[in-house]
Length: 80
Image (cartoon, rainbow, N blue to C red; front, side, top):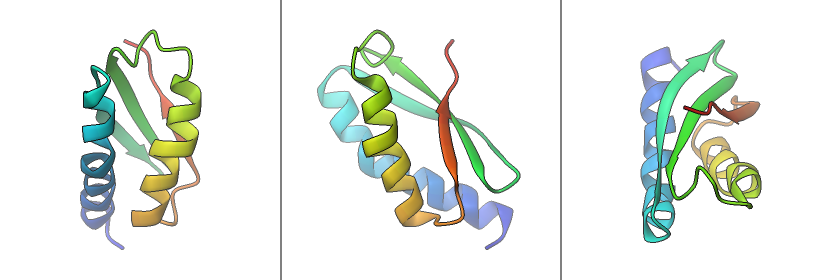
């Protein structure tokens, strides 16, 4: 998978999970993909101060991204 295909697949994954985040007043944006293994995102809105945002990141975002791009090993949130 090329770097561009990888980025498109990660964006598709974020598009799939975004409605769930937005329904709770949050959002997410892709910051970067490093070494085709690490995805850096930024949780936004209500997700920033949410007490379960790490669970959302692991169980929701990371799992969905890995479904579209299995080579991704880790997803981390970069705080604003």
